[in-house]
Length: 237
Image (cartoon, rainbow, N blue to C red; front, side, top):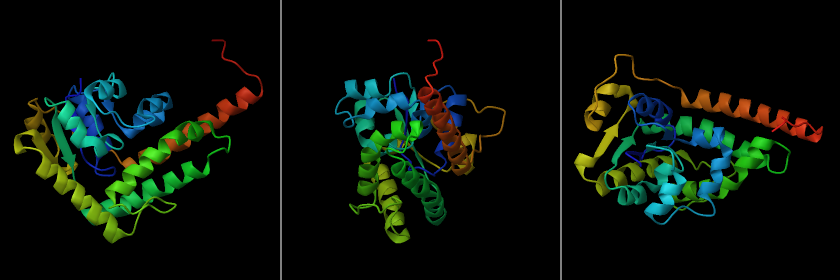
């Protein structure tokens, strides 16, 4: 059952929040990384996002918390079907968010899209999710269809960022929502979730570096698997 819903956009410290929630006992935490690590889970999101609690329980089976895209786009639906869950809206300086979002999401999305049919096992597995991610980006950025790098100009993107944050804050009662900057550390998050702060420092993970390393390693592994398959290799299972 989902206990914590993350409503923040990508590049607002969601990877740090994932690590924090799992440290606090709210793991497994669904994040875009879960789809990188387990592309077989992508099928749960297809052909469309769920319409009821049973559908969301199927998509998020095995998780106690869920954050980042594609989950955070559906914060309203998730808050309705899991009324007992608390919601964390991660925020960040808008200009710094845009620079980070453009550098990471745009470049990587274009690379994945360009890899369709190119023999890369990972990116071909991830490709079916692209229409959903494009829909999410288009809706978030006020109906403007993203270009090849998925990211509109800064003014329009920042407006979408602000509009999303305002909608979350207006759509939920204050006692159910935490507006959270990961720079604040354990204090606000632990108080909101009703748990004791750990002794160790709050996790500070660089989403951009982590995503680049993750995708590079997965693409390398995908090419290795593809080469073994072409050679008739099996693992004996």
